[in-house]
Image 1 (cartoon, rainbow, N blue to C red):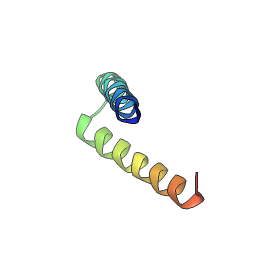
Image 2 (image 1 turned 90 degrees about the vertical axis):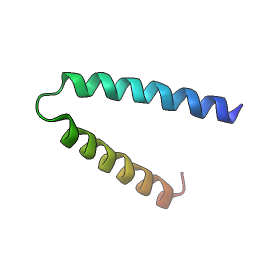
Image 3 (image 1 turned 90 degrees about the horizontal axis):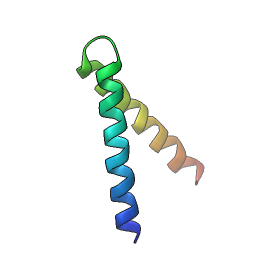
Image 4 (image 1 turned 45 degrees about the horizontal axis):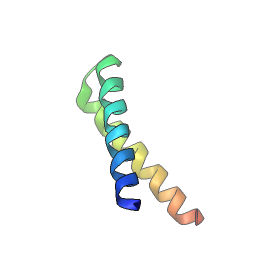
Length: 51
């Protein structure tokens, strides 16, 4: 069950990010890199806080 939930959230977030990237001005590559960095920062802070 946990795998299905993770897969569902992953697909949903990928779709949302794809839509956002098409709407944002500028180069999609830089927005993609920025979103990856933001995601890694959020993951790192959540992991260190113990959530």
